[in-house]
Length: 183
Image (cartoon, rainbow, N blue to C red; front, side):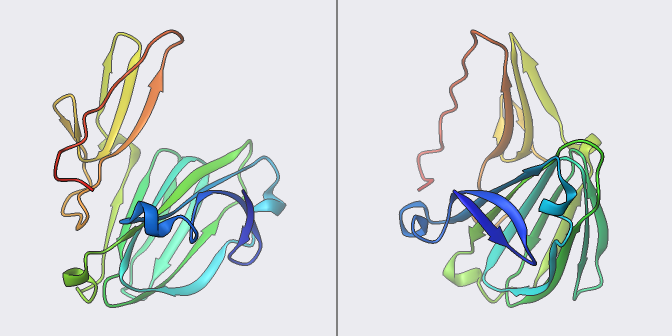
């Protein structure tokens, strides 16, 4: 559903607060995409997180990240940022004007109770570091977890999710078996 977040970013929320009890450890999934910079340029100025991990995957565009641990990065087309807030972190994510459609996703992952007060950390993965499996019309960019023998570059994630970008040629299908101890 259409939602405004941050300083006025227009996005689409696939699921959020109402659905979180049903989908834990996944708390929120937002799709931010627009051809109009007015829909995203105000960004997400300095704000806190605690007890969760945030995953920002930029399909097309540029987002500047800065946090209270001193990390500064530009998340560009195809890049991923995995931030573990743990005991607390303050950060900002500021989309930059982009010619064409800005597009990306942000996923919030609940930390297990034993890890909620862990030290915050940051992982930035550039697009070339994300390995891709291709076969018979199936293309899988493996960001976290493992698919078809390809392991994602994002490591040491507390909730152990599988996070893929899957593209299928017309008329193809793909099935992924979830590990039995995943909830």
